[in-house]
Image 1 (cartoon, each protein chain N blue to C red):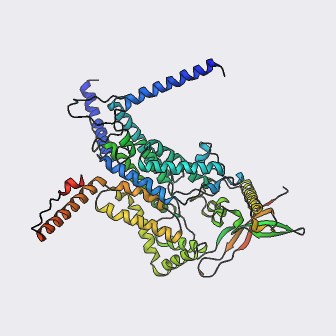
Image 2 (cartoon, chains in turn purple, cyan):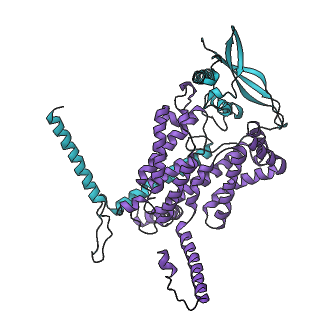
Image 3 (cartoon, rainbow over the protein chains, first blue to last red):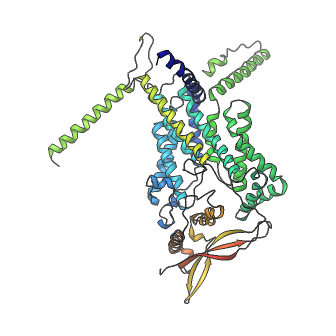
Length: 337
Length: 223
């Protein structure tokens, strides 16, 4: 076989492979400023810490072992329920790791400890009851932050260890973590919509919300019953149900910058708040993933320019009012530096 | 402990310290920024920047494949591999105009040689297992939705119910012992699990009452 023949035959395959690789790189590795991922990391851990402050894991300690029924992954890792005193210590370590992740000190280690302990503490209750899914985005988020360079800016690490955590300008290394975390957030909704369609079909949108709300009414508190009554009596439930299903299906569009993201993200958040106020399912900790959708450096630049122009106009107005008093005021870019 | 042992420990400690110091000096340059006129500086690293970048890229690709691939696989197969999930919550619902079935959990109390049933569905002595969690721990979702939503991994059997009811009874009696407000109450000597039928959910303002239609499991303390 001649070399040219092999090359000709490999040509299209190689071209396709290069095309796929290029598309993969373009999608997953957009060059991003280190400030974007650093500031998003700060907000992520701060929100997780705040929104889970009242969460009590110690109550699951020392329960009769007969009530514990491990999930499959628990059998795989030989998961053992801890005593109440151990849980108390683990809870302190967990909150400590969230705080350290927030300020960006020993960030990779803190994020990894946070990820492992979120997985352990949060799922302990599932062993006694049944699984839930609100913690999954947080576990993945922390895992991604542990595996990425999220502390090269806006962190204590970047101040202490300048050579290792040195921000080198926009780089794909800062783009992929945000991209994966955004995917985790939108996949949560998209997967949910696909499962609804496969389990019930399109009619889910027309009747499910009414069924769910009537079901929730039974065990609801008086205030929640009022909210459920209000929705059931005053809102067209099929329209709301179908809207929710379509919104979940459209969630991946939030990965596109611009109008789709600006429209879909607030709607998803509103839907989650609606679920919380009516059904009592608290998905608020997952809001921690929202900061990864925001291009913080660009926002900072735009805001700085806007504030700068307002500042210059104010100075010009002041000087026009009192032309006799010439005060030397530094220009905005020097002030902002 | 002999002096030789102490000396060996000291040598080992010093070797580790020297090793970590070497690693530190190779990885971390001085924290002061380079000054003008210093000339080009070469950053010393254990691996070198290009190899580190390649390792970083490999790790990131593995993470992307694992997280996104895992979630998509769980969605396509419609199966829970927690933490990879198809997020099946509320994908199946019950028609609110039709009768529906739920578990009724009752404890058995002995009074003057006679057994009396006490409803435990809203008992505060089961803390932290409240009404909702009590149904969940007994696999009510798996039964009600045929494993299409929560609790799909639970293998429901007589043994499953007996074990769970024993756990509930132990929890109740333990909390009873610790609670000063319930000093005069008798401990449970057994448990019964019923399937209760409720008419429908149409009459919202009226609190619905279920009727026992089927005894699913029974447990006695002396068993």
